[in-house]
Amino acid sequence: MTADTLQIDIQPTTKSRLQEVDFNNLVFGRNISDHMFIAEYRDGEWQDARIVPYGDLSLSPVTAALHYGQAIFEGMKAYKNEEGEVLLFRPTDNWKRMNHSAERMCMATIPEELFMSGLTELLRLDADWVPSQPGTSLYVRPYMFATDAYLGVRPSDTYYFVIFTCPVGKYYANPPKVKVETQYIRAAEGGVGAAKCAGNYAASLYPTKLAQQQGYDQLIWTDAREHTFVEESGTMNVMFVMDGKLVTPAVNDTILNGITRKSIVEIARHWGMVVEERKVDIKEVIQALKEGRLEAAFGAGTAVVVSPFAVIGYEGIDYELPAVKDDSFVARVSRYLTDIRTGKEEDIFGWTLKV
Ligand SMILES: *Cc1c(COP(=O)(O)O)cnc(C)c1O
Image 1: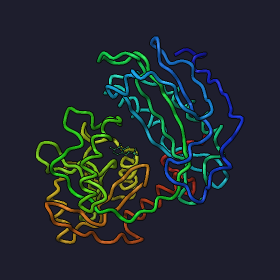
Image 2: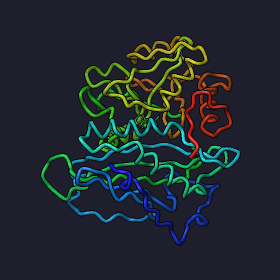
Image 3: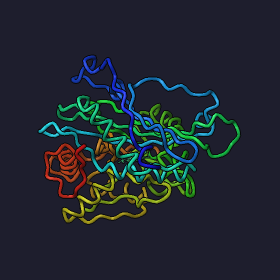
């Protein structure tokens, strides 16, 4: 990519939709901000980087991504601090992970400058869309998909890289009932579980629907070989507080390398807590629960930060978890991470970026 291809052409909207948004009743994904960033990959380089009014894309029915699934995405959040400045949380990690996904799906990779300048220019232009009420944020969705209008199976030669954003509200939900899934799988060794690819989400919908019909909210995925080791929960990483230690499955090629997970691990170590990243046998978790040694089990991800489970269903039995106390690790780490992201807490880790 040469310097002039990185030049971002900005076409501001003449008709902002900001006034139409009810910032006191934000529903996830309902209101998309005024602008979107687009760059196109062709002839071996990224070009036509631009920010345009949010609107429909025009695509060939043959578009490769729609048939063979070369489609990946990222998710992050932007916040406003008390001075009204816009903060991003560890965006370079999203860029690195996007390229990791791209490599696994045989797609073009994105230069750091393109990702970061597309992101920051878009956020500067739509800064008024970043909400400031407690619990709210601007969700940022970068994604890339194959655009060759060619029906043969091969890696596409052309791609779109798009970023749009949407203001999101506080996530109200009761602590979920999760079911340990021992029939269907999310990922297998050698597969694409570590890539944030669209198909992983499609594959999870049916088993999740079955669990919901049985009265659960979400799944705990187990390993593909033995259904013994805990992998993730829904589309979040999973963590346990057992015997006073933070225990979480080690990241490998079946587990997505979550930025929230990684941050919680770093905070726990900084607080002097013992952290074990290893294989976690579900029987070990159930045993600890029965013996009162399991303080908490929770999902970790950008969308909710942490989501402590109320019930774990395993082999037909529902096990209730203790309620989360205000001074527990889960409550403290959730507050601390939120405060770093929103600029309330001093960012001693250097994780936030002002756009
Ligand atoms: C995105 C995602 C996560 C969470 O990653 P964060 O960077 O913390 O948002 C965990 N598991 C899966 C499968 C995901 O797609």
